[in-house]
Length: 77
Image (tube, rainbow, N blue to C red; front, top):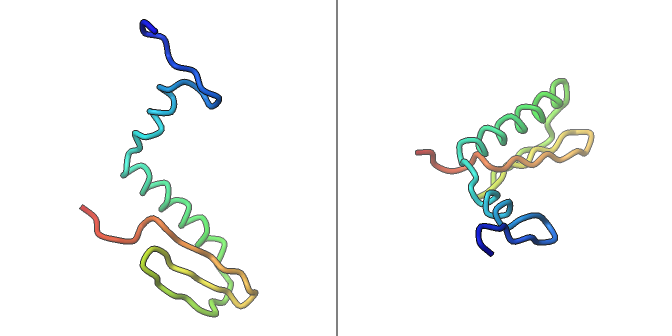
């Protein structure tokens, strides 16, 4: 192979390995931004119920929509 990248149906092996190198802080920040965006859409709506589970929070509005929040539960360093 002499320095050549192994090609797969989804890109090079190097491309796939780079996907494994996720920055946890960047992931948390992206999740926070997504959560804030969803919360912004809830302005003016009435919450029917909310529940906290081990891995997510579920919010249901009186119009029947359910919103699921993940990724920020648990202890921080």
